[in-house]
Structures are given as structure tokens and as C-alpha cells.
Amino acid sequence: MIQYVNLAPESTSGIFFSGRAAIINSYLQALVSGLQAGRRTLKSPSAVRFVPLSLGLAAVVAIYIVMAIALVPPGQPRQFNFVDERGAITALSAIFLAIGCGFGSATFLLSAGSSRAVRLYWMVVSAALGFVALDELLEFHERIGDRLDRLDLLGLTSSKTIRGWNDVIVILYGVIAVVFGLLLLPTVLRYLSFLRLIGVAVACFVVHTAIDTLTEPPTLVSVIVEESAKLYCSLFIAIACLAGLMVHAGMSSTAEAGQDSSKA
Image (cartoon, rainbow, N blue to C red; front, top):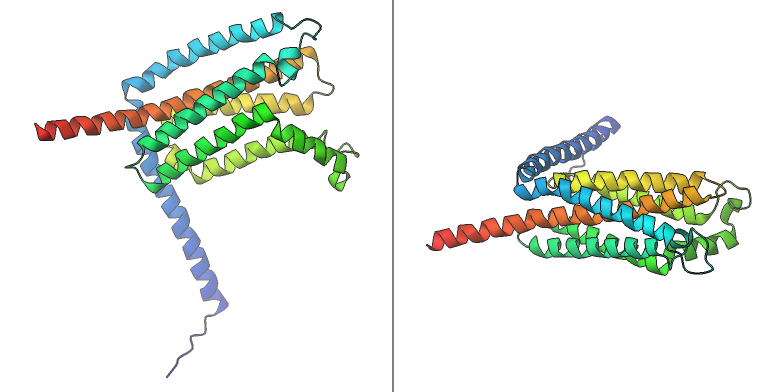
């Protein structure tokens, strides 16, 4: 005999909210677990070395920026290296992003024995950085933005609601990164050195986007500051990925040492 269970609306909503509470509780537990693991990695000697490394590379990039201002091809404006995609700033930014992609890919390979979440995280990081590096060189968002401007979707461009779809796409990149960052935050907390360096990169990205969006028309100073912030963003992303790689390299060396001692 078949019995039918009639679920009242109150019981259905109770199941829904209890399920949501369980998901939130599981997420918070994962955050605590990730933070505890991340604190252990901060005690490693390699984590301490990233402070002088970051400062030294930042100083080198500052010298590079000064040279990009001073050394301009004949017949080109002073801001050539900052506004032209063939310029020195875009080239070095793409190199840093490609290096970050390489570090992320190496970390993904070294994380073979780690959890699925860790491997997924480094796979996403590597793919995202590879895409953004290609975007720097092939101008994906500029080309798509120009086409959307010509279509004038919803009349946003002609009404001056937005300056151009190029800006919207760049901001969308940041929004997508924040969403994935929150979803994968328990995994990110396992790499506190990585997270700190990414925080610097995010601050540089905010400066870059704010100047690009709010300064109209662009000036020589605004263009130089904006593109310099973008370059520093790419630099700290690459250093952050190196920090993640060093964590897994340390894990691999510790595991190998343990295997050697057990054999002995």
C-alpha cells in the first residue's frame, strides 16, 4: 500500500533553511581548516624571503617604468609605451602574467596528491592567467568592447551611461575573480603568503580600474599611473603564484625526506 506524505509549507521551508545552514556551516569549517593550514606555511623560511624579493622586484619595475617614460621611439608621444599595445608596459605585463601561469601550472602538477579542491583551484588560476596574458597581447577585451560600442547595446554608450564597453569588460574580469575567490576561499587560505601578495595585486587593479574609468579625458600623468598600476598588479600576481609553488615544493621535499628516512 502506497502512503503519501503531505509536507506542509512550514516543513518544506524548514528543510530548505536547515540545508542552507548545513552548507554555510560546512563552508565555515573549511575556512577554519584552511586558515590553520595556511598559518603553518607562514612559518616556512621561503615565506619570509618573499618580503625582500617583492620589494626588490618592485624597485626594478619602478626603474623600468622610468625608462619607459624616457625611451620613446622617434615620432611617438611620451605616453607611447603606456597606451600602445606594442609598448614596453604591455609587453612586460604579459610576461609577468605568463610567468604566473607557468608557476600556477607547476603548482597544479605538484599538487597531484592533494585534495580535489586544491587541484581545481590551481587549474583555474593557471587557465585564468593564461587567458589574461593572451588578452594583453591580442586585445580581446578591446576588440570585443569596440564591437559592443558600435552595436550600442541598450543605448548605454550613446547616452554616456558608460564610457565604453571596454571598461565594463575589465570590471567584469574583476567581479568574476572575486566570485571565484570567495567560492574557493577555504583553499586560498591554505596559502596565506599567496593571499597577501594577491591582496597587493588587487589593490593595484582597483587603482588601475578607478583611474581608467573616472579620468576623462585621460592625461599624460593619469595614463602613466594607470598603466604602472596594471604592471604592478601583474608583477604581484606572478610573485603570489611563486609563493604557492614554494608551498607545494616544500611539501614534496618533506614527503621525499620522509620516504628516504623510512627506507633507511
